[in-house]
Image 1 (tube, rainbow, N blue to C red):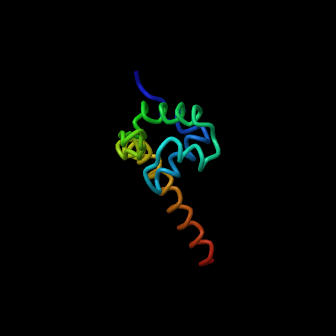
Image 2 (cartoon, rainbow, N blue to C red):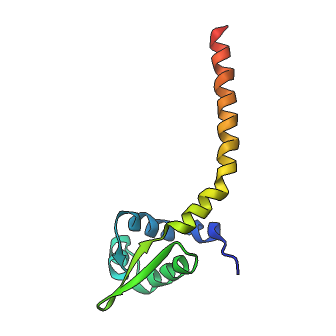
Image 3 (cartoon, rainbow, N blue to C red):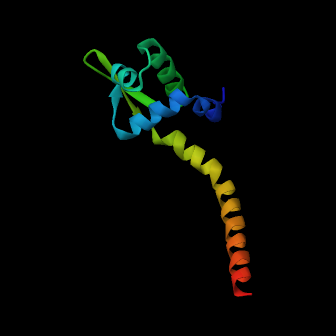
Length: 104
C-alpha cells in the first residue's frame, strides 16, 4: 500500500515531532513531555511516522529511541524537484522583468 506522505505530514503534531527529532534522537517519553502530548497519543503519531518511513526506532534498555530517516525525505525532495525548477524559472523571469523596468 502506498503511503500518502502529505497526509502523514499534514498533522501538526507529527511535524513538531519531526522538528524535535531533527535536533536529536529521543524516547517516546521525552517527546511526549517536550511536546506536551500524552504518551499514548505520542506513540500513535510515532507509529504513523515509522510506518511511513520518516522515523525508525531502536530499543535501549526499556525504551524505544526514535530518530529521523532521510530516505523518505529524499523521496519527497525528488518529487518536489520539478516544481522547484518551475518556480525558479518563473522567479528568474520575474527578476529579469523587474530589472528591465528599472532600466527604463
